[in-house]
Image 1 (cartoon, rainbow, N blue to C red):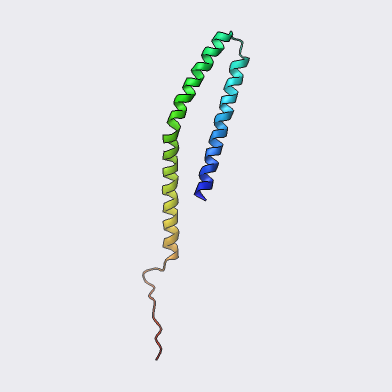
Image 2: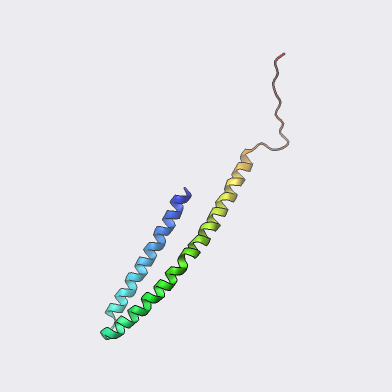
Length: 96
C-alpha cells in the first residue's frame, strides 16, 4: 500500500511540474518580446528549473523517510493493541 501512496504522490508532483512548465512556456511565447529576449528568458527559466529539479530527490527522500517512520509507528501501535496485556495469563489445560 505504501508503494501505491508513494507512486500517487510522485504522479501528482510530476503533473504539477508539467503544468507549471507548460504555463511558463506559454507565457514566454505569447509575451510581446523580441525573439532574442524570449530565448534569453527561456534559457534562464530552464536553468532555474534544472537547479530546482536537482534538489528534488533529496526533498522527496526526506518526505518518504517521514512517511515511512509514521507508518512504522502506526504498525507498532496496532500490534500493541492486538497483543494480550501483561495482566492476562494463559493457563494450560491438563488432562487428569
